[in-house]
Image (tube, rainbow, N blue to C red):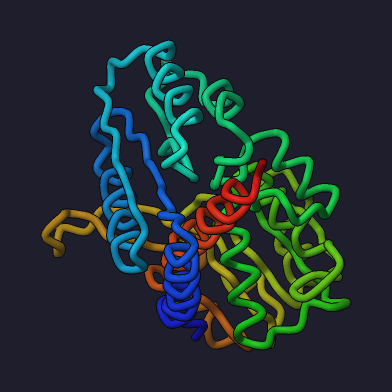
Length: 292
């Protein structure tokens, strides 16, 4: 089992050291999360990010806006944060209410503070292998797990199941790039892919990010493959206090016996996403502080 909590603690320890060094230079790194509405899952994620900031000694701020907040009002908040020298990273929790154009919100962010890595400028830098940009946190966390567990990507055949801009596409770009955790031969598959189980069975490394609970079954997985489960799906479970439980895109119980290594849900990719957000914010703080 690939333990995301354990690796996340390694990353957070590195971040703690970086925060201390930045403070010695008179720099207090700061992250602001903007939350629109009262979605329980989003509130949980935002609270986790605040705890991580406190853990490494980084300043954090949460701006909560009512669900009926207009797009113009959200943009005004973003422009103010763009101009605030005390804030190095800005994250607008996704998804916003339906009346707000998320793409427009992302484009309004200052690329140097877009620590989620979704601004078109950062996407372009990832494509060009320009390491001065920010990489989306979940793919970056997946790559770090592969590196930490010594899963070879150089020359490996990887199938990324899912084509979103949040995970699938940036994951493919990261794994194809030159350098540690890269140099892979990558296939991006999705719900319209023909013979999908057969395509996935070619993979030495299968990364599941399709957003369907227990979608990946043993017929998708080659014997001895590594499986990274990015899915976080809520399914009803009357036995729990909340009435639901979290499961991945992979049917862990049936797939795990076939694998060389596999991430669980929860406790796999999730903690890494937050840890890499901290890393990206510190990268932003260091870069902005050096700017003329």
